[in-house]
Length: 468
Image (cartoon, rainbow, N blue to C red; front, side):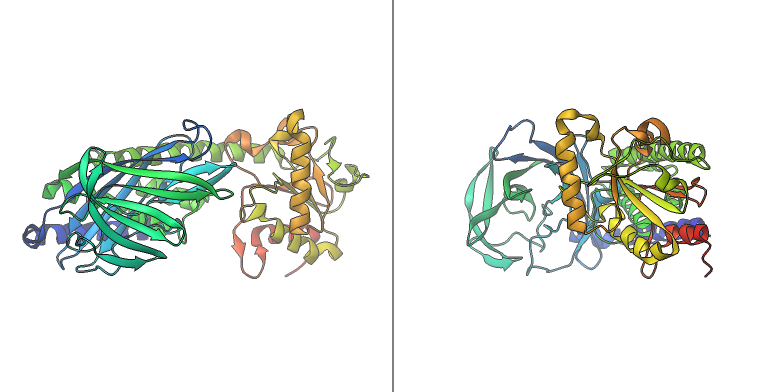
């Protein structure tokens, strides 16, 4: 039912848009023609190695006039390097309404999935870095010496100057601390020749963002309609499988993957010769990897089910006195995770929800053990720092259940580490009253407002023999 619903929504979306493009071509021609802008961008840390801290990306913008006089703008970011945002957050669309001049600069919100952004890693944390749309709102370029205030910055249109060997009119965006952003307008146009911007990441480390136009090209009606149809189809699919703000990673559920595989069939051909060609190829690769990852985790789960947990080599993070006999009898939850104090990223391995579950069923006999399963434990030079980090984290979270350390790499060597299958921690293991594994769940659980980790709650209650 869900597949058919989404498929029909996608078809209606495409047919509606196709009708607008076909029947609106006369008005579009009167108001202007569609065009495409391609920008090269890079972000570099002010201090540190200028090579290792450099992140490059390409931003492609497709602008299509619409019947009411506004402009529909679609964008896609193609990132260099291994650190990238998940593909659903690498494209989007923005409607520039006719005559909209009170807020000429669009973008700058790293959480808004309809505004451009790219990924940049600082201190082992992946950040979404926002880029403003290089197309100002309004039908024409702002006049010389024009000023306005927007999103905490004061803007002032300056003189013509040289930017990357081309004449451009500067627009300074500044606050009481100085110049934050400088835009360079193509003469007589409302799109940018480029920009420079100061970006603060990590512990206030200063970075410089530079964006420079590489190509401006008009599009035929057929080119525009082909590109826009693919954008609209991808946007419709994204709307049905994801919601909320932009994130730096996505933990796909099986139902979401099923929808994606069904709806994205044939997109490679549809996206050919459009700016979305590289993105669609990446989506296809990601779905193949997800399928292999899902199969690998399923095999690990199959092998683990019904097995005991023994000869682990676990030790308490604080104190002593642990033995495997403590999990041999009685319903027990084992939570394998990388208990790091930095960077702290929500949902913290769902530790808080697990602590709630422990306090909820502890009197009925539930035991819970957190297990530090950081791969750095196998590096003698990093082990002590890793343990200190875990202690800081458990103190910060006020964890009430005991936390163990996987000193002998039991997860990797014996139990079955989901990371070896390309998945991620946390890993939740549930043992029944006989000490046998009855639940092997890699990744985050869905969260219920009343029950917290509802699926885990249900497994625990059944194992404890608690009736509804």
